[in-house]
Image (cartoon, rainbow, N blue to C red):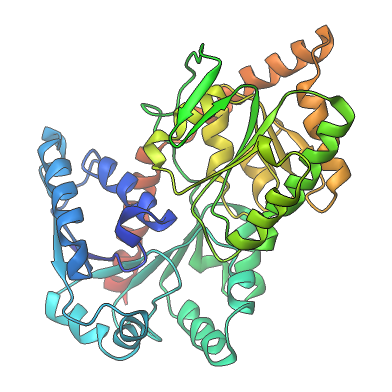
Length: 394
């Protein structure tokens, strides 16, 4: 079996799609399989060194039970511009897939999709696609809608995203829910004894709240969080700071202005892009993880924070309640005052509040232990094998 994996959405491993793929490749070699599998990553020439180094590392760590899995990378020869990449996916990719003799093709997002893939195909997405599609120009909306209906299977992280896809007239049988995984060798409780956390160019003094998310749209609620933080500070007079950790996206200018205009601007830190493997240091020093986004399909930072043993305060919107269960303090993501009240609640130091928070963190640690990238890898391979099995029966 030969699987082609489209890496054009990965942004040198910095995007969510890139992080997802890296975690899958780290674990897929441990999957128990009955047939030899060739996984061929294809993408821009500039990605070759990044992926070949990674593929070499993965290959050297393969267990004896996974000798049937081989991973490689092949570059697609075309100019590296978004327009040319989209054009190639529209009119040129199918001949490439046939030339490479793929049995199935895997895509990791909706930015670059064929109108119709002639081979069995699988899409993995963490996005609430109705939001993404509604923001596209008319022609692009039609193109993506057609593409989605031609996939053999679409993998999503929560039932909420599945419901959203069904509203886009994607048949439920073509949608599989596979909850995101977690690298428990990286995200686990640890002491943070220093009064400062050094995240150059900042040395942030504790206590602080952390929000991990790309600054990409109003629905991420960064500006509302800044307002809620100001209300929290006005009312409590506590010394807390606010750390907004995430890559600078289209909405960064507005968030930067909101932070600058806040009366507590000196207590608000925007880190910009920060390597994912370094986030545990930020989590470990935090008083709590605040997650106000109302448009999350998977909400991985919520699980990461839980696995670090810090309290989670999040919006009761989107797929977050499914991800966090009963192990978080919830607020209305559309209410600044409700958000501020939740921040105050997680900061209370009376005995009853401390005991309740301790119990919530203990339960959250057990809950987060159920999320595994190995399980994700197993489930994805199972879905691929099911797709090919159905093809043979036809």
